[in-house]
Image 1 (spheres, rainbow, N blue to C red):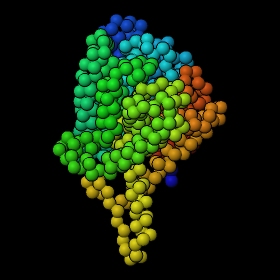
Image 2 (image 1 turned 180 degrees about the vertical axis):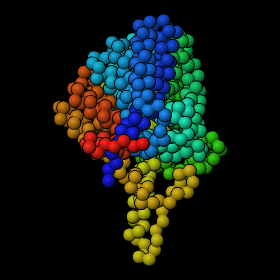
Image 3 (image 1 turned 120 degrees about the vertical axis):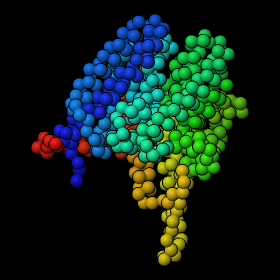
Image 4 (image 1 turned 30 degrees about the vertical axis):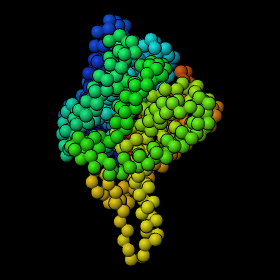
Length: 506
């Protein structure tokens, strides 16, 4: 039987959404302070307006229920699902007022892309965007990369009673430590620590190539945030190509790699359990997958005139492979080169890398190595069962922070999400084709949006068809929530539309 939302549920959901919206007003203080510091008075006014709207909307929602109720799983799914859209609408206000977007829908597209760490952008004249607006773009990556719920829980906004339900509703189930709040705080600490180290190194490299100190620091900070959260936004329109610096590209490759690894495995390394890290199913699946796909990509690139020499292949090819599999979206080649210089095989390999993505419990998008490894293990189990005597009991185990036994429920969850991703990739490709685009770029763009990959061809552009743009927004939203939360939320909304079924829970 499908569960329905009651009036009590709506009030509780509204209360916790209000808490998140009020928290976003604190996040908006960062670009507001940047605008004041850089004497950017017009953007400062925009962020002051956005803070006012966030305070009004947040306070109104919060007072739907004065006393916070205990969230059950149904309500937590709704809070998480709606939070990504509600906060995106709030985040859109200052960016739309900046004058760097052709339409309001374009600015909403960029905000959803920022929050979901997709990194696709349809902004106009990015090179002349204010420091405040750029800061807000990367603040969205920071919040979205760690997870809106993780960030909120790390600040203790929801308390201990509702933390577990919200934490699991955002697609996370593993705990670094038994306490959910402490787990989120550990995630925030290790992430901010890595970003800080990367910022220091990149600031030095930006100073070496001739940037002014303030600009060098801001560019380094933004690149570090975008790299670790596997977001993909860049402060310049040419992305990483702008810097013409191999050392910067090397640092960013390392940051993207670290960001694509599960926080649980980061914790194991932090505790000195390095052997656990290398025995993990995800890491072994990642190494095998990248080894095979990189060889195929290199072989395909060798047929292209622009990548025929070894230095160009190593520098551009390796960077694009890491950017694609981590679902970051940084580019050290132009969009035109992506579509014309790469062979069709290399183009397809990048799409496959984005489709699979990085590790579960990391900042990456896509299907995830954990699910691919489990599906591979289930195939091994099926073959063993076919070969084993009728009286034998086949048990398949795998390593993921300890020894685990493969169960039907684990395989079912992995296969369900895998199928949903594949179906979404296919439907998105058909939508692109229906809008008059060729099959190859339509497939590539659909995979990029649903996997939150961010490397885009020419389909996602300023002023694109509103229907296509809206579909891509839904794809980014669905991919970030890994479908189950979104589908459950939509089902609950549909079955709750009959007013005669609404009851008041006391």
